[in-house]
Image: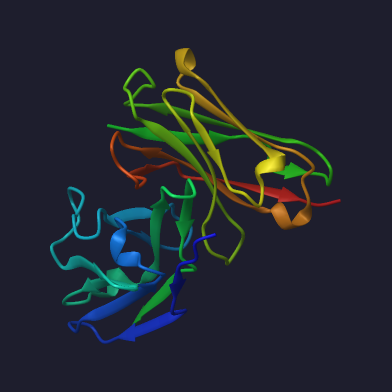
Length: 108
Length: 120
């Protein structure tokens, strides 16, 4: 089955740019989605179809996807961005929905 | 405005069967291509996809749990029901349901989740 791999943690200073990666075989062929989850809350969709943002999500959140790696980029990081971030795709070939293992973003 | 809410037992004993209801509003299964997904998250761990049901009653399940899972829908009541047999302490998790939009492969609205603890 398809596997998505994420680094367990990323740290960034306020105002800087955070890059959270998600690796998978030929991931660039898929529409990739990203969720933000704060403690005790349900996941919140922040990027879908690789680079689109739902209504209400700041432009600071952007996504890209190529080859075997997808990236969620958060510009001008704020304290409120501290959360776990999960990537997700739908592997139509196998019919499976797959989530990455999550990355904890710490704002220093 | 789409909302979803999970309801079910909070405490179960091993070998029991979990029946979790996802009640939703703001959309209906009369819209072709709409889906509701079931996802869980053990304490301190990652999200795990369990299964998905579409408006046309097509269903997909996680291969690792397929033998234990059944997802059904009641379109008239705007509900989805997840059944998981032979519960074990490792199944202790927060269980979420989420809306999958027509033509999309993502989950754009999520329920608040409900914690199910399995303990003898």
